[in-house]
Length: 388
Image (cartoon, rainbow, N blue to C red):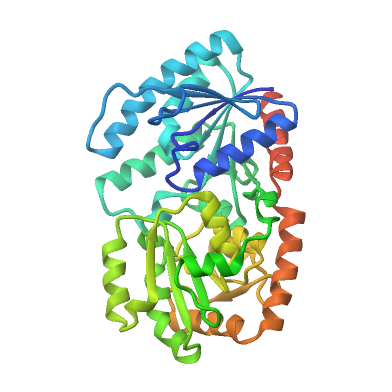
């Protein structure tokens, strides 16, 4: 099939997990025999057209800006719509596939203008991210999310918890939703990082323990609970140090919390880290912590499992789907520093137990979370909507 995939972020524009998801899925769909065209936003220093392992990437110049993000979203959708119409004249798409509300206007327009089925992947919801609808912007985003799921011929989501959320919040019929787990590029974690050299770069001594967080610095990621757990971990493991990677609007607040614990010298905020460095850092950690308070899937947990590091995660949402407690990782109570400290101390205190988790986790990732498996299930969705 000829697929038009629409996403506002695509490498090298990486804001959250959507960019990597779309890139991995598009490459795998090509290997399944599809012709995939990605319509996305332009990015400085990046060509407007790129053939990326046979994925045709069409970047669009956004000729107008605006300081209000949602207003800018409607602006860039206008330019995406024009690009898709031009592309369709030459390609003749069979299906349109959008990701989250940010490309809903252009996706719905393409569905009706091209008279082609629309598939929508919902990675998360506004009501979940914001923990309720409290502002005009939140209500608008929630409305856009309802609209795109209503217009879609099929809705894809990444976990059973997310399926339930969509059924309840948007009143979607269960047979309109397909659950297709996210995936990762497992081969990226098959190399051997120079663990000691990586740790030295970040000031981690030979007998110190590295506890790692990876993700955006926003409230839904629950970083504050890891910071508040740090003193309880350090009391049991005096050589523990903490690295927080990623950036976000909560960073200054989180740095203040870290300083208030009395152990600010043991907690380092790195900001954005390149993919290659992040892989090496993950492979060199003693524990990866995912303390989210809302997580539709939790791809960071998968990356930790593939990298061979014990994962301690909050028992919520998609994380509870991915991790089997006491077998492939450790699940702890959400928003609970004491429980989080217990989980981290458990894996740091028992090397044999940690190796047991790592062995089981790697096996599960290889069996269930490859892009090949995700692309095959997505192909089935395309075939289903094309028959209607």
